[in-house]
Each structure stands twice: as structure tokens, then as C-alpha cells.
Length: 408
Image (tube, rainbow, N blue to C red; front, top):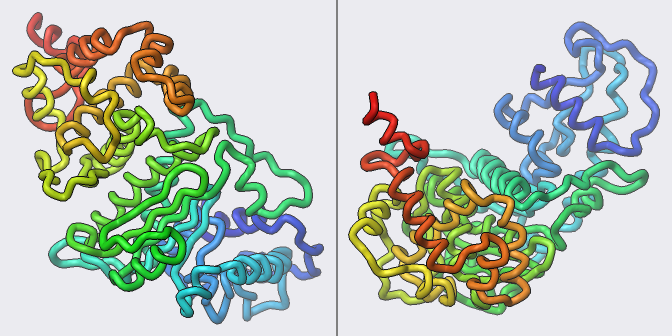
């Protein structure tokens, strides 16, 4: 399917109450549609725009006003002329709801998806030593990353898609008929001043570092400091925090990280970042003196070595801890235990989260969902790590792979 045809298909689905098409057969230039893709946007951007409901950057386009289509200049119109005006109105109505832009007194780069409201106001950032990436493209890559987190969470927690259209509702109304009570708001700024300004207004805090509120109305704000001043830094930070936000808001809005589920909160945040980006370099740690680096964020080899030489049980001590009270190596243990759950006991995840949100003790939750005590669960997890984590590299081994190689 061409980008042109694909964009038309998306607009047909977004414009729910469009007027009847005008008469006209179009021409060869517009493939007899009467409209063309707006040439102010690259083919790459046209492709990325299909992922989102709205984008303020294309909404500001003087030619298409966010519709991504313009009238064909070579003919008198065709069967798709009717798509442009209603889409432009829908975009304009969405732009009028931007409270944050009004507060900051300037246009802000934002996209909205079914589950997220994203603001990436970083400008161009380093992609590598030689190349940079503009903020608009970065914003769409972040959108893809966090939508992948959403997809994985839906898979792991057995979420039923409730997206079937309801007559008369808008795209925004349709997006909220899911398993969450609110959209996840994620803001990334280029300056500390902007970050602190919105923090004071919307989060009641003036931290110089990244900050989030979880549970009923999740919101995350950060700025391009230190390791977050790169494309990879912004993408991984948003991916990591998207996991925290989704799981805290899922079904019963409540953050488990400070009510006895810190191991689950820390483990899940690291796992989804690791799964999508191949490492985890973010952390949710309150103590500023704790080392904030652990094997470059690539953990399987290091953890395998650690648990093979450490006889003391980890989990009985970690299970009652709050997320922010752990060290990064302790959070890496939680990541690995969550990975064991995902790959070996995925059907138990919804009940584990439900139990933790009901403020049940972890030992009772694991006994009910896995039929194991905490120590029995740790024994099973340790045996799996030794068998499936690599000696070098970072790729998981298949169970019994080592034994099979030995018999050849």
C-alpha cells in the first residue's frame, strides 16, 4: 500500500461525520482522487503521522492545516475532496484544547495517540557523534516506543480491545473506552526553566530532575539534562516511564511502588525499557548518593554471575521495599524476576498486580498466583537465570540449550 493510499485510509477512519463527496473524477496526477499529499511534509513524516490521532506540528502547516492533504491543482476535484475540511476542523478543535500552550504562551510541539499526550519540546538532539535529529521526528519515534509499551502491557495483562466505533462519538472519546481512566501525559523540555515552570503549576513540585505523578492522572516531566540530552536518552526515559504510568493507571488507578509492590513497579519499568531498547539506563531512586550505573544497563551476564556466587536470598528482603529505596543493582534483580514472570508465568501477571493494588503482601500474592512461597519463587527464578542467561553477550538462551550442545 502506498503512503498516499494509506493516508487516505487513515483519514476515512478519523473523519466520522464527513459530508457527501463532491462530483468529480480527478486526474492522473492525483490518481483520480482529487487530492494530493501535502508536499510540505516528507514521506517519512506522512508515514509516522498515521500512528497518531493529532500532531501540532503538521496542524501548523499553512497549506494543509493538519489534514496532510491538499486539493489537486490540476483538476476540479474528485471523490476524496470531502476529507479535507472536516479533518481540518477536527484538528483545529483539538488545537484549541491545548491548555499547556496557553500557560506557556507559545505553540508547543505535541502529538496525541489513543493512550498518550506527548510533548517533546527539545529541538534537535544528537543521534550520534555525527548526526542530529529534529524534534518533530523524535516526537514520533517516542510515540512509537510508548505505543509499543502499551501493546506489550495489553498482551501481558490480557486487555480486551474495546475500540469498536460507537456512532456519533469523536476520535478522542473513542480512544478513552479502554482499560485506563486517563491518558498518560509526558512532557520533555529543552530548559530547566520550562520544566520547573510546569512542575510548579501542574505537579506541585520544583525538582531540578525528572519527576512523575502516578495513579489516577499520570504525568511525567523531564528536561534535556546530562544523559537525557540525546535521542536515545529521551526515547529510553519516555519508554521506561510509560510503563510505570500505564501499570499504575491500569484498571484500578493506584501506584504500587510505595505500598509493598516496589519490586513489581521497578521490575516492570526496567523490563519494558530493556525489551524495546536492549538495555535499561533509567532509574527511580530517591537517594542521591547511590551509584546510578550498573554494567551500562546490560544486565544478564552480570546478574547470572552474581546469583551464582551469592547464596543469600534476595527476594525476602527486596519484596517489602519501596521503589525509590532500592539501589540500581537491586532494581536489576527486580527486572530479572519480572522477566521470569513474563516469560514463564505471564497469565499470573494480572492477578499479581490486582493483589498488590489491593495492598496484599507479596508472599500472599505469590502463593495465590504461583502456588509458591517467596523462597520457592526465588529458587525457580535463580534456576531459570542460570540456565537461560548467557555467559557472554546478552541474548537469552533456550532452556536446556547448554545440555543439548553437550550431547552433540
